[in-house]
Image (cartoon, rainbow, N blue to C red):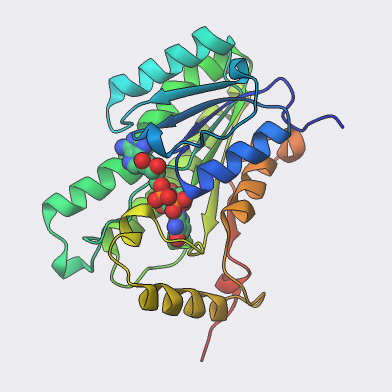
Length: 258
Ligand SMILES: NC(=O)c1ccc[n+]([C@@H]2O[C@H](COP(=O)([O-])OP(=O)(O)OC[C@H]3O[C@@H](n4cnc5c(N)ncnc54)[C@H](O)[C@@H]3O)[C@@H](O)[C@H]2O)c1
């Protein structure tokens, strides 16, 4: 079978995330050459049987503009071009609180990783994509890009910002053949690595139960659900789709629960 990503070079940032790891497996199965970037590469999967030439692992803290430029340089040197960028990194730390309880330092930290670093990663890749005749950028927002998240001001604002950044890039760079789309998942079956550290088993079970009830499909979002949407956007299946926000939330956004 011809893969949907044959001959495409794709960067997955946050490759050690649950979503990044699911995307890695799916994209490799579709013939992609991957650059896997994470601040902590010990989280990146080590079980891949992909040919080493098709899989480049790079350690980088993407809040650093120079690190983003270095990543792009390494990927172009190794693969010769960049067709896709999928930004899956992010933080959702326990300090994510409501407006009154959010310190300036906490606000700055969350915005720096979840929004500014996504901007830096996108900006760094645009010249290489333009030189190659186009490309596809896929950013991971959240249901909080579309709705408010009670008690999570900085995180919600960062994810709304990611959606608007995505639209902005789509409108500024469509003429370069570059598409940009944003996926808005509901809470995943596993919370973010930061939040996982503080939740007890009982809290995790309650979280899963609450999220199940929010979707007409009666189950929780999985990393594979998000990875499949990423495959759609990064491949030519979505050739005339740009500036889109795709909820991957089991229809939960359509329902008001009384
Ligand atoms: N988990 C959820 O319930 C949920 C829900 C909706 C949206 N999301 C979003 O989906 C994406 C993936 O979530 P997840 O739970 O799979 O992630 P995760 O918490 O499992 O992993 C996040 C990854 O990002 C990396 N990272 C963090 N800061 C970085 C930096 N400065 N530079 C480079 N890498 C960095 C970490 O090392 C880690 O590997 C995130 O953008 C998250 O905000 C998650």
